[in-house]
Image (tube, rainbow, N blue to C red; front, side, top):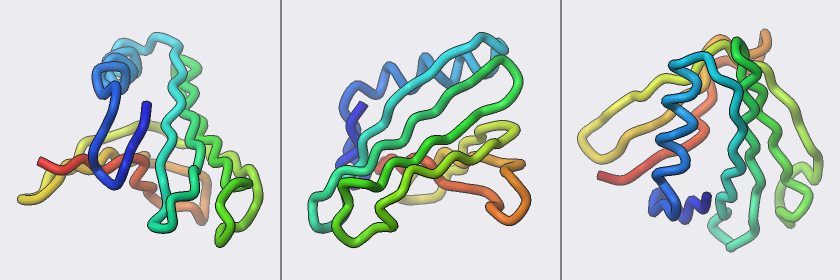
Length: 106
């Protein structure tokens, strides 16, 4: 799935992932987002049936940390505003807080 600043490609795959989380069915999805400069950042969501692991790969982001980071979270929720819908990972590792993993323009 591609996320180009809120414009999504293959969004139905993300919808299927959300459904599988609700059904407590194992699933994984790769989301490639792009920085303002156009550098790709890989975000892999891995659901094991109870927890969601977020793996962020910023090794190709010239202004990023250049690391691969793993964060464990309890759930994913939808948060809607007037302009967009945010998909937020909640209950993440202590210190990580809630993480917006995807934002979609309306």
